[in-house]
Length: 224
Image (cartoon, rainbow, N blue to C red; front, top):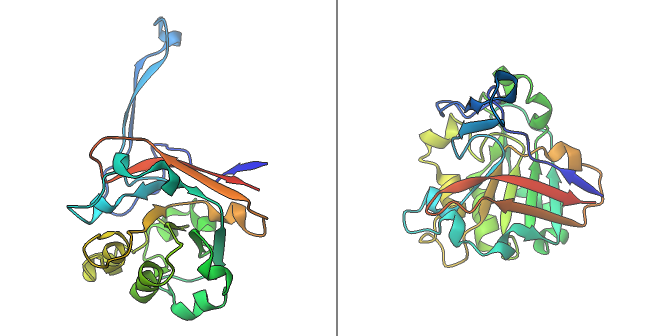
């Protein structure tokens, strides 16, 4: 059985504060006498369920089409579950509860419970919970099987903490020059709640191959 854990793109979906809104522009419509239905989508790469490529925070990092396709298939997914409140963080001790699986996983899903608030934008886009810089460093330097992380909020860093701290979490995971180990991909705004208490066999998370860009919308599929 397969479950989609990406959200559909739509005009009124919640977005990171300050990001451009989505534009969906009808070009032709059959109910107006046109021979077909066609549409223009003006999409900001970091709206909706998407993946951050290293180039997002590393000017020398890989762009989305340069990343090998194997980096988007995951055989040992792990959900770190802890319902958090506004401004709270996942800490290293939260991850340690999941040993020894923690050292075998190739993608970590951080479930904060905030996916349940996505239809309440005043909560969802506020100072949402994220992961700490220490957790990001642990993943980058010690959990070397991890290819990617995913979180059920708009960003791996909130709109309050991220700019204030110069986006240290993003850079810790993505910047190729900070550590000798591989960068770690970041999936944001993921409906992880659909996976809780499921027996997950495999995750597929294929991006659009848009040349030279810092990320991509992505449809994440879980095989359960």
